[in-house]
Length: 199
Image 1 (cartoon, rainbow, N blue to C red):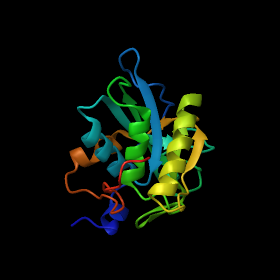
Image 2 (spheres, one colour):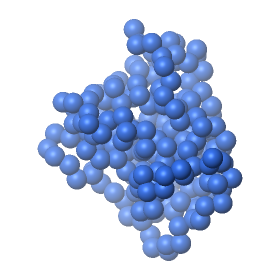
Image 3 (cartoon, rainbow, N blue to C red):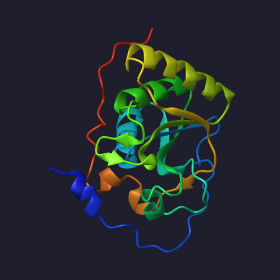
Image 4 (cartoon, one colour):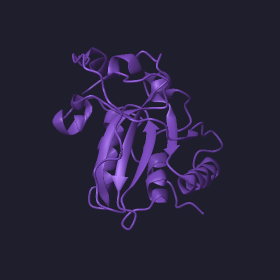
């Protein structure tokens, strides 16, 4: 069974090339994007791809957001000194899945009550966050957060809600990591909770 130690012992990227900022993922006209952070991005990506692959998901990329340095590497982000969160950016068809659906799923698949932590993964890079791309997303994020805080998480939600800043794609070996490495590390906090519908 994969353990936290497995994750610690895996190799860091050996690349020395700088990353470049990634703009919107190439997608059909009318597509929208959502950006969230919920701990180790491998499991977050895996769960979103599995849940929405036939429900409007065009693509999903793991990367870094919310920091104050340019071209962050995985090693730098893991140090906690860049201010970035490990994050997921999905591009989706709003006619098939709503932003609200994505945010509700986000609050079901991780623990938003632990500050700078998911399961055994600790540090600001593992914080819970929603990074909105426009005023409507901000409104929905705040509405859903208020509801889940009251109805699901008993007033303990610590998720930050911030305007999306510059996005940096993670190194190639992180993309679809659990598809390419079956049995790889998955944060034990990443599983789908069975909550009643929000009212």
